[in-house]
Length: 491
Image (cartoon, rainbow, N blue to C red; front, side, top):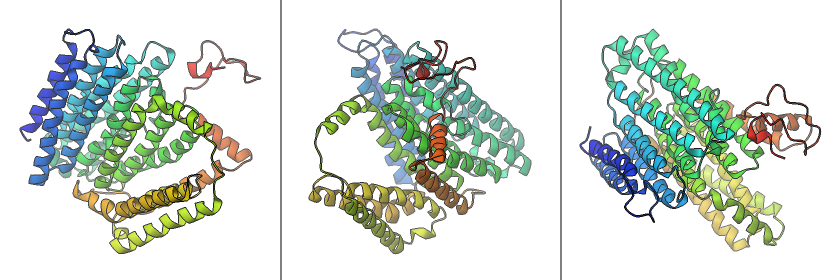
């Protein structure tokens, strides 16, 4: 462990203390002094990443540590304005710094006990952060659901630690490859449960949608950093020689990715859409880990964290931007332009794949999802109502980014985590998930009874059930019983 790691953790602990100090100036948000030592921790984490690159040792871990600490600083700086006047601000700054301590400890750990300890510190801190969303019924649902699911995952992880240490006689992560067949199966399944719970994936998916009720800074930390930790856990336990765990992870990820994508299309609220989007992205991340593509999963986690943090921090102005967009009269979209836009990205991606040989990658089946998403984006840009010159420029940029990802980023991603999984899931599973996802997407855009049932299923995904005593609601204007969850009591 590099000296920079304990320095980073010490600076984060100083941030926890600073958040609890009395305020010297009333114009400051209580607890916002934590931003300064957290910024020092980010500097240490950046130096740690540079050191990892120089020594070519655990680059993925150093990158994830910088991501966690850097995002904590950014979100805390945002919260120093967003939470001004909020009596819970001091708790937010202290708990967010403590969550970063737990995550950094888990990332830097060389043994299973220290990793689990950091993992649990992060879990407890995040549950406490979710509880700062207020005393309303939605926050209570979020706290209760997250407590059950996340502590279940932590219990599974500690059980895996106990079995691994009892079997190998060592706490070192390097000893996991020597587990006997029975112990390896038990450890891999328990670790899979812990990763699935943290990612908010099926069948432990109910807690993540409920957290939409919490504050924006907490949502940003939760969706940009906390849920991505499953990739790190699976990376650290990749040496466990068992086929069962990867199948559990891949199956949970595939199901979640398909259904959460459909659920995202049914949500009318901004944060609800973002939450389901996160669930779908975490499903893709778990699927990548199940296939043994840990480098791809790490790159995806970093990209998702940066993008989703910006979306959550800007969620407050999303409605305003949408209303401004509706007020502008735009020409009708072009169907021919949509065909051209999709074709340009499709052909560019095909050329990039042929030139780079990326299809020989062990997890090349994952490219189907990225490529298809890029083609759809190209069709939307080409068929948009913007001026032709603007659409052409956007298409050129999208085609270049797509080619760069398919030909450069995807094959090079494994350099971040050059670890071969002991028993990965075959690529054909990812192809099957892609086919089912495409078919369900087309079905959801159709009409008829099947489409309506699919919409109802996706709409109820992850939502608390109606009370069993709820009377039938005959009109849209009749409220549900007063004892039901708040989201069912809207007029």
